[in-house]
Amino acid sequence: MTARYRPSQVMPRDLAEAVDALPHWFVIGGQAYPLEVFPGYETSSSFFDGVVAAYAPSLPEIALGLGGLAAAALVTLIGARIFAIVPGAEAKAPHAAAGH
Image 1 (cartoon, one colour):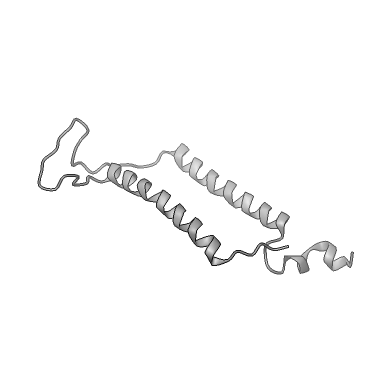
Image 2 (image 1 turned 30 degrees about the horizontal axis):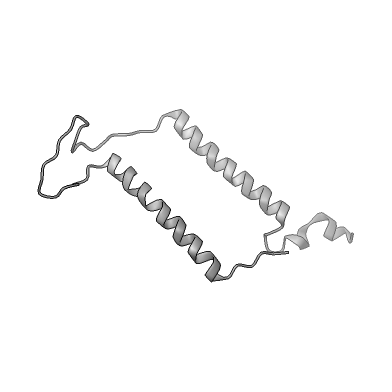
């Protein structure tokens, strides 16, 4: 049994996800690169205003990112195998070839 989604069902979900992601883009961008918050005015604080932040990920951060990608790929592969959502997967299954 395959799940069929109409565009009217999928589009509102995609739009909600995109709207949810917008604040994250602005926060991360504002932390990495100085933004002009009040055009024409000068602001100051003790947090290195106007300085472009230098950043290089450490080895544990790189390992964590790669591990997350590997875990997501593994879950996707297992899910595709269990739910047989890949087109033509039924024909390639071992029990289909044996005639059972």
